[in-house]
Length: 124
Image (cartoon, rainbow, N blue to C red; front, side, top):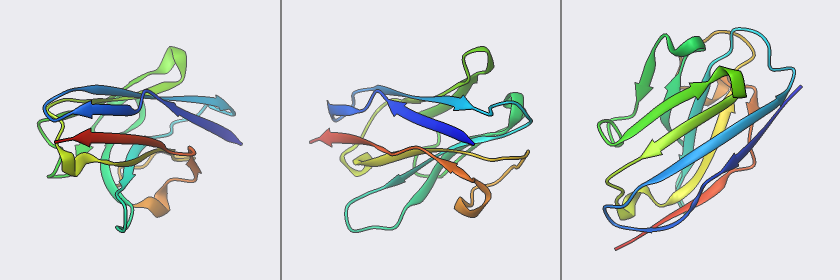
């Protein structure tokens, strides 16, 4: 099993920045991929960004491309989501997720382990 814990969320003004962290513990060895999803009030959870094992590839939704950057620190078993130029529509609960095996996917079904989620609120 793998446990994921997000941190770094909070309240920020439009145009501001936040960096989310996702610390993994447990059986973290293996060629896994990490992803960030988000769920706004009244909406379905959606893909935001992903990074495949050892950062071979990164993927972004059109809504965050150019503003968000996903990265990992394998030595610390931690993934990050740097969010710049934040907009009110970025307000959501952000979830990190991890796959058991190597994937290059934007689909929730391909990620077996999930964090509890962290709130990001962007005020206008």
